Image (tube, rainbow, N blue to C red; front, side):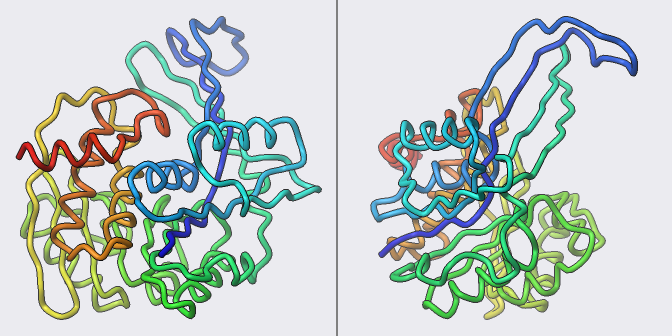
Length: 305
């Protein structure tokens, strides 16, 4: 059975600078990187590397050179591009990133084609045979809700990564999700309470279950995670201990790993361990899509603990 990821794809243009430029100041960069980005693309790469089943990536690019570059990047990473849509009247999504010498960053996202989906979302055929469908919030809310409904109608388990958190309209999204995976900040945005301990995170997870999802997983970074289910199950998972150098890809690798594990029929706790292992390994390499671990590496970490 397949996994479908519906989400964003951007061209990340990253410049390194000694310090952030002030208004009216022109400064020289110390480095430049161009790469694949967008939460949807990152999670599609993660699912592709970690799953044993077919992965569909449903996303939109513009009819421009950047769109061609993004398609080539996906192909190089093994992601099926058959379900990419070209929005002829829109530019491809771009993220303009400045990183200074202290690793602080500023990011400006030009949504472009990512935000051009019609309110009824992608074609329902994208979810044919889908066992798990994965969503984020870098596409229009109405299109995302419509896509989630189509996935559910196809019999898929619907996972929502509520990032970036929206200031309004979250209840309609939560109502269509079977599983949500907020981090601490997103959990605070959804609940009004930022959890500072396992117990507080568990209380938040249980409260969010009452708003629609069957399962809420609150990711606590280096502290691990907690989960609560509407049927009363709950628990916590300690993190895998690795030599972390860059956390950029951790959340997206976790979500791709969770989709892969559930598509294979793993029980929830086993799926959470698999996803956590993938997320942990992603922190041991720099980059976003480039840092996603392989299935073999993830399985080895699980066997070693």
